[in-house]
Amino acid sequence: MNILDFGADPSGKFENSDLINILVDSLSTSGGGTVYVPKGKYLLNDAIILKSNISLKGENSNETIFFRDSVKGGWSISKAQGLITTNPAAANHNIHVSHVQVNGNFKKKASRGKAGIALRNCSKSSIKDVQTFNTWHGVAFYDFKGDDSQNIIDRVISTNAHTFTSKDNSGRPRGILSVDPGSKILNSKSFNAGTGFYAYGKNITLEGNHAEGWFEDNGYYLIVDNLTVKNCSAKGGPSPEKGYGSGFAIGYKKGALIENNLAENCDNYGFRIHVPQSNTKLINNRAIGCGNGFGIETASHPYPEVSSDIYMEGNLAQNSGIHGFLFRQMENSQVLNNKAINGNQRMLTLSTRGAIALKDYLKNNTFSNNICEDNQNKKTQLYGLYDFSVNDIKSASKKGKNNKIKHKSKSGKDVF
Image 1 (cartoon, one colour):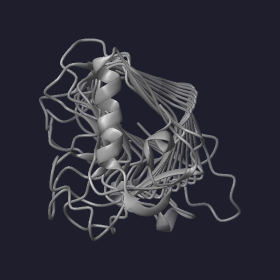
Image 2 (spheres, helix red, strand yellow):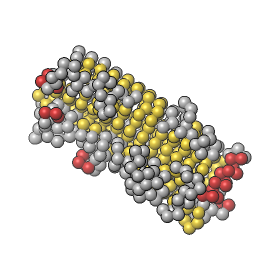
Image 3 (cartoon, one colour):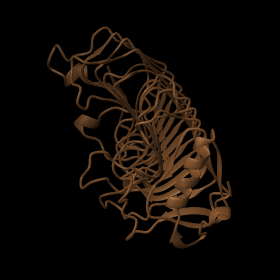
Image 4 (spheres, helix red, strand yellow):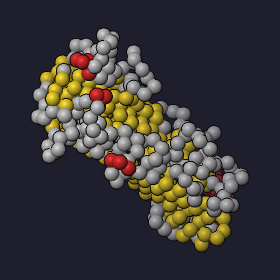
C-alpha cells in the first residue's frame, strides 16, 4: 500500500499517524504486507504502531522523513515509547522498518522524550537503512520474551539521542540499543547520544559500528553473556581533553570476544572490564589517547569478587593519560604480547606508576612478552611494568599471589 494513494500528506502540514495505523491494521487482518512511503515530510502527532508481518518502507532515509511537531505531538492517544513502535503486550514477529528518517524534535536533556524507532517484543525483525534525530533512544529492540530473537539492526545512523523520558531518568538516552537475546547490531553509527550503543542480555553481536561524542556514559556499554564485538570504534571527542567516559565498557557477565576495535580520545578508559566479567578475550584492540588504555574496573563489585579467565593479546595502548594497562581483582588470566606506548600523559604520581600496572588482588595470572616503550623526546612513561605489591600494598591479603611475570621494558623502570 502506497500511503499517498490513501490521502497521506507529504508536505509536512497535516497529521498522518491515524491514516498509517489504519493501513497497518488493514494489512494485518489480511496476513501482512508493506506500507510504502514515498519521499516527503510526514507529520506524526502520535505513534505508528506496527504489527506482525508488516514492513514500513520508505524511498530512502534522506527523503522519506517522519517528524514530530514539538508542540502538538503530545502522544495523547497511544502513550507509546517511540514514533515508530509496536504493542509490547503482543508477540510481534517479522516486522521490518527501512529507508526512512525519523526526527523526534526533542531538545537535549528535556523530559518526556520518545524513541525514534522502538520495536518491542519482536522476533525475526529488522531496522535497516534508517536515520534518527533528536530522540530518546534512536533505535531499539527490547521486551522480547524468548531465547533467540534473531532481530537485526543494520546501517542505522542515530544523531542526538539526547533527551530523557522523565527528569533525571537513570535510563540514559542511547543511540542504538538492544536487550533482545540473539540480536545483532551491524554497520551502524551513533553521534552525540547519552550512550552510543547499549546491550544487555545474552548472545548479542556488534560488528562494524561507530560511536562518537557521547555525553552521559560510554561509547559502548555492554552487559551481555556470550558477547561478540568486532571491528567497532569509539571516539570520545576531538582530543583526549574533550572526550568523555569510556569507549567500551564490558561488564559483569561471562563469555566475550572483543577483537579489532578502536577507542580514541576517551577520558576514562579505552576498554573497561567490570568485575566480575570473566571468560573474556581481548585481541588486537587499540586504545589511543584514553585515560587508561585497558583496565579491570572494580566499580560496585569489591573483592572477593574477581574477574577470571581474561585473555589479552596483541592489544595496543598509546598516549594514555595514566596507565596503558591497569589490572586488579583478576585471577587465572593471561596478558601476552601487548604494547603500552607513551603513557602517563597526565604526569606521574604514586598512584599512576606503570605503563602496565599490577594492583590489588591478583592471583595466578601470567604476564609475558608485553612491551613498554616511550619514544618521545620528553619522556612521560618513567615506569614500565609496576607491581604495587612490591612496595606500596602493605596488606598481605591484597598482595599478588602466584603471578608469573616475564618482562623487560624498552624504556622506563620495572618494579615487580
